[in-house]
Length: 133
Image (cartoon, rainbow, N blue to C red; front, side, top):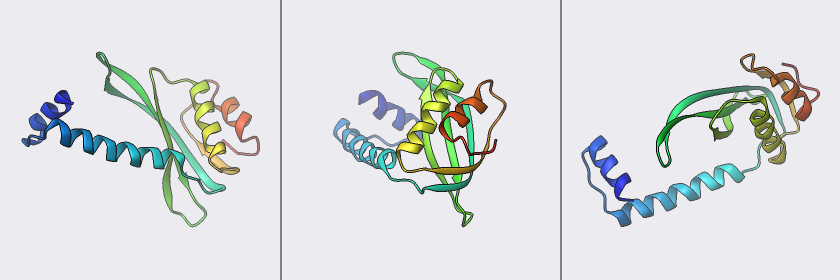
């Protein structure tokens, strides 16, 4: 917690005690857990899939892929459906993320949009066989 506290102080010029950092972490963790466990709509007109590399601190700092799925509903509203972090981008990881969408209630996607990652079409069609790509 001391590392987080010093980072916030460097970035924002405000010091937080380790107990305050612990309380904030707990509150955020509950929000993240609720987000990850929520039920999604059953149908999306379009789902955008993309990944980007960001610096992640674990034991050391390294670049890891952050996968994100953004869905557009029939009424035009958008929502972040899911995200995950992995050391590399792969069709297998995308397929696992798509399975999570299905587990959270997504039954039908009309169109997926993504870059041309090798194996992406197969990953999508394995989980959502009726969807267009």
